[in-house]
Image (cartoon, rainbow, N blue to C red):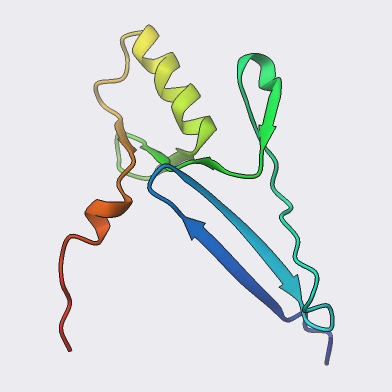
Length: 103
């Protein structure tokens, strides 16, 4: 740390099926931390260092949730037949790469 600032290196694994992240703080470059433990299953009975690459948007297209939380919320909306106004996306990484950008 210098001047009260914390410097970090962050790696994001944005996968087609699952996503996750890790980070390292300056002065501790050889130690990486994955602080998020995603809970899933009935009552959050299981845990994973990655979460599904699933995105749920509200009717106004703002972020509702991501990962296991998005899948659980959307399943609840479907069960209540109130899902029609929401936007739910899964396994969309490859679609993000569909355009070739030339400089």
